Every structure is written in structure tokens, then in C-alpha cells.
Amino acid sequence: DAGVIQSPRHEVTEMGQEVTLRCKPISGHNSLFWYRQTMMRGLELLIYFNNNVPIDDSGMPEDRFSAKMPNASFSTLKIQPSEPRDSAVYFCASSLNNEGGTEAFFGQGTRLTVV
Amino acid sequence: AQSVTQLDSQVPVFEEAPVELRCNYSSSVSVYLFWYVQYPNQGLQLLLKYLSGSTLVKGINGFEAEFNKSQTSFHLRKPSVHISDTAEYFCAVRKSGTYKYIFGTGTRLKVLA
Image (cartoon, rainbow over all chains, first blue to last red; front, side, top):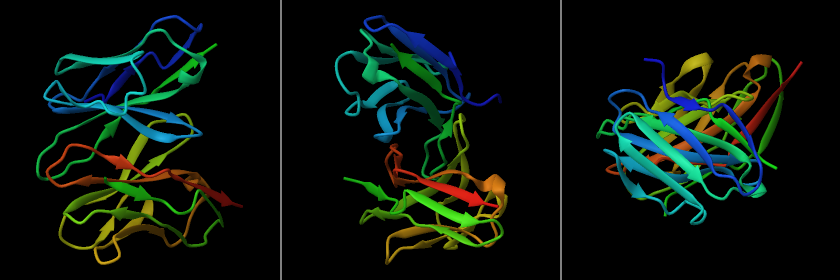
């Protein structure tokens, strides 16, 4: 398996524009996570899905952020409109959740810069 | 709420010296524990994990960690570090029966020549 695949790797956009980040989890995994990493706040969990259903979105900073998982092999994180303070590295991770407690596998991240 | 504390934000250490990175978690129930490493401009990579059984867990790159239930700790150790170990290290916990992974704030290990 190629691992968790995120696209794009880098995104530079102007304030006010819509940004869509994409993630393909590892085949067979049933949980998917979106994290945001900044120097100031570290690694924050934004939202996670189990079997394509959002379970906890309490980490989503505000209504400008939305995430979807239309099927088991694809998820998006959308920011509309984007603001400079959204600049960060966004990671997608997936895991196979069972009582064995397997680990989360991370993608390479998308570095977002909003100017 | 579940939390993970990494007390040291930065740890400088000379090459070939031993190192310990500290991690404490808050939970009164069964947990799974993980250590991840992040190299610059890369994602997080699993170093090791504790699920059950032996409290001493060995991982990749010569790292090991010990689960101490009474102290709710999961400290990471390496007896002799290399320059290539310079990276950021994250401790994470997942409560049994839940899906959520909670990460600490990370410890930046800098190995000096």
C-alpha cells in the first residue's frame, strides 16, 4: 500500500479564497483523522470519521471549516473563506480501529499558506 | 478529558549520549500508548506502541519505552543517540474503546556533534 496520500503537498492562496485539501486513506482502514499543526498550537485534532461518519468535529475551529468523507477511500477538508491565520500544515491520518488498538498512519501533509 | 503531557519542549544531547524523553498521560482506564517521530517537512512516523503485555516496548531505530501504570508515564529512551535522531517526538494516547488519538505538544530532540 502507498500509505495515506494527501494532495496537494503545498498550497498558496489569497485570503478569501476557497481551499480544498484531499486525502486518500489506507485501503481497509475504517477511521480517518484531520489534524492541523502550527508552531503555536502544536498538533490539533480537527475532526475524525469512523466508517465514513463524522464522530467528533469539536476541534474544527469555526464554520469556515468543513470536512466530508463521501466514501471509504476519500476525504476532503475545505476552508471557505480562507484567512492568513489558517496557514499551517494539515495532516490526514487513518487507522484500523479495533480492540487491538492499532496506530494511526499519517500522510505527508499539506502545507497551506494564506497570503 | 484525556490529556498527554510532554514536559520538555526541547532536549539537547551530545552524540552517543543516552536520552530520555518524558511523557505522562491522564486516564483512569485502559489506554494504548504510542511514540511518533517527525523529521523536518515530513509526516509522523510510528516509533513504537504499547497495547498490552510486557511494559517494556522496543521500537525502531534503537528506541524503547516503558509503560508505568502507577505513574501514568510512558517515557522514551535510547542508550546512545546519533545525529540522525534529531527530530521532533510526539507521545500519543488512545483510550480503549474509543477512536480518538490525543497527542502531546512534542519534544524537539537536538543531537549535537
